[in-house]
Image 1 (cartoon, rainbow, N blue to C red):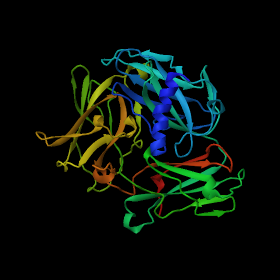
Image 2 (cartoon, rainbow, N blue to C red; image 1 turned 180 degrees about the horizontal axis):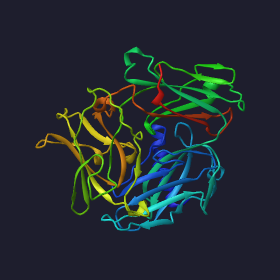
Image 3 (cartoon, rainbow, N blue to C red; image 1 turned 30 degrees about the vertical axis):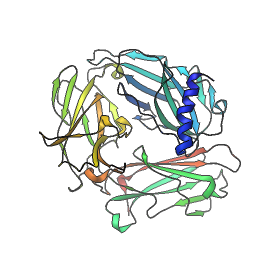
Image 4 (cartoon, rainbow, N blue to C red; image 1 turned 90 degrees about the horizontal axis):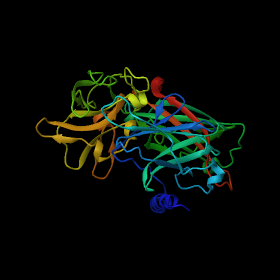
Length: 416
């Protein structure tokens, strides 16, 4: 066993013994714009069909052209390590250096852009469906960051529909996810034990609902129509900005300033929970790298310091305000926490981001770590959200959880 694998096992297995599952490790501040490229757009949560390529990209802003290595591991539904050995789920080898990288061009911020595609010459493909974690190490065998992804096989059909909450108390604030699992290829023996489900809102695993049991079976269909168990806070449309031209104010940008790099100052945001819902098209928390007058946006787009400002009375000391979205994997860290400026009366922070179109929202977290996404934005049943339903299956005697189906829907046509 190499030292890299030993350190990786210590990092992942020890937490598993304590809390039962692995968690993603967020990167240091000099690594930015971690993105998976899927079939249609860029995302933080790739859910790929078995056999589809996986493409991971990220930038390093330290100017060192460091070497990075990747390790891929397979997990059960509950993110505990599966019993499969590497040769059972991976064709070829991992723990290989990422060879594809380019340095920035015509940008104030020097950076290197790394790209990993699987399959490649060393890692020729992934063989099993289920949950995966890709971990990136540096030359010193240190874990730099890790990200989850899923691979599914189309064994069952998953029909998804979005309804208003059946709980009258929250009918204007929550959305409920109904779904049906149907197949002629699997005999659903004891589905309460062999079938597991995961329902995800806007690619955010932190708020996902897991392991709902089928309420009843109708022929070859499993029916899930819960009153409260499958409901999410509806939230509000994401705020957004676009700074594809760093030299001029763009959408959401009030003014700019050039220092060591460009600084973009966004318009001051305010609380929306007490205001009527207003439709505002968004991309459900995602981001897209865009820049004008570039041939290769991935190495020619510049980094700018984005200044966020939120007008709100100072909260009690046991509550904090964060700004987040897919751009930082919905992390709650010091780097995206807002500080109250007594002089301006605003909550403020600055985050270095690559040029592009970004969705973001402000959330409140109390001293116990409880997240309230709607405290500032509000919760409105009309909000357009994306929902994904993943279906896992482990037959009696099986050694891992297969991901056998994937369904998706939006609340744009929500019904009662």
